[in-house]
Length: 126
Image 1 (cartoon, rainbow, N blue to C red):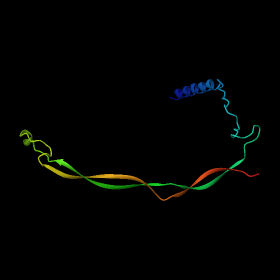
Image 2: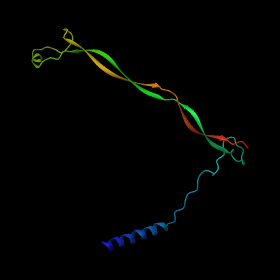
Image 3: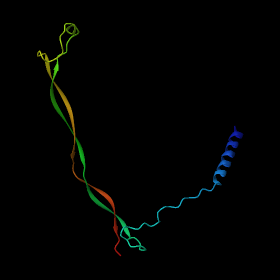
Image 4: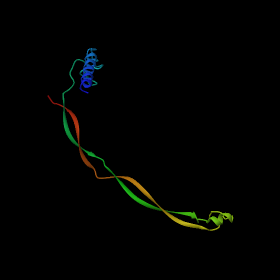
């Protein structure tokens, strides 16, 4: 077992040395190192800025649940024997039941406004 592990490590090391000798070169970036702001004259440095934490209001919503009752008409259930007798399952002859179904209503409403910290860049006065 030990000779197998030693051979495996030797092969892995040789493969690493071979792949390392290929010499991959890094690509140069397409854009310049310093990007100029729009409206800045050529050859001048962009204005110095610093980052500051500022509190801003944040709009929040909350979920509100309610139920709504809805009445509907349902034909009476018929038996297997009445199917052979030719009786239909409809409300024409007054054989209907009034049923109530409960529906869930979900709404998003505005909640209390909170504050959050936001990072802003402001120009440095010289």
